[in-house]
View 1 (tube, protein in one colour):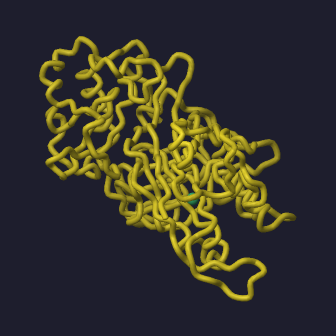
View 2 (cartoon, protein in one colour; view 1 turned 90 degrees about the horizontal axis):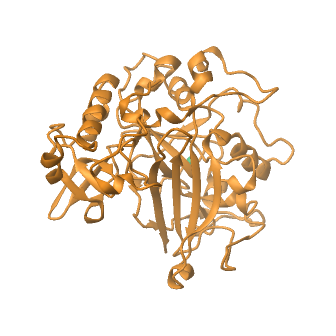
Length: 421
Ligand code: MN
């Protein structure tokens, strides 16, 4: 895993003043990658977020491509070298300040895009608490299936409908069948839900037939963003057997625009442990390094702003707040090792969804179906409004950040989307 270096030095500040403000998501220790465009040019370019600005990497003469997937496919050594050059150039006192000031763009003046071309998207199911909560709704006596603690469960999702934060989400239509109805009916989804997830992005790929061992797994990970896997629970309940979710999931998945790199996460790594009495991972999912620091200490927050809250000038209200390492039963390295163990080839830009990241308690649940116990117990918002599922006009916002004593806090920005009829 990535060692700490000068780019993580908490004493380092930037000549971009907004990056030095306490609580900023994008201090000089972060340097996440994204793609943006600015009128009148519609063509996306690669930038790095620094405070409330974006450093255009081509204008700063750091790269000669606009293709994020090319940058993601670089070797870890090349990536670390690029990060070092960006950090040195943006650091207070850098001789490059005069040259790079003209390569800065106001974040507020641009359109952000899905950060890379996502060729393939896999969604995992890494929260044992989410799996148990959902399982209990379907099988009260036997919520967790016997394979759960051995196999990182996942399915292949659809990449074409991944959308960037801020894109409206159209309520899907589909077939549903109420438990007491004789036949299904067709119409708009009545149980539209969100899923609090992370998107782990693949950097360097692997050849077909060449599994990635767990100790090399992080060399193939580029970084992480926030991910909302919008879900139509009523469509899902009727369609999911026997082959799993289909149209209940592929009408839109929102990703945040900035990929926070594995290098930026280095100060926030945490041990991976199994609860007492749970099986240890099979050898191909286990290593000393993964046990020592396979997890990431990250805080995740979900907020909602209803149409009424917006009209009344009220800020978004928190639904839940939790810790990634309390939610995820598998580490990102284990997901890569498992995904490739059969020889499956991953490619730069592939997206591995974490699955809904619910913590052990309901104040850290990652979906409305958990907060409302399958729609049975309405969830009351601070202004008195109630929700079992999302209504038209609701804006759902995911946020995430890492903080630790002795390190500068970094954030993932946000993934937001508003439901429209
Ligand atoms: Mn999901």
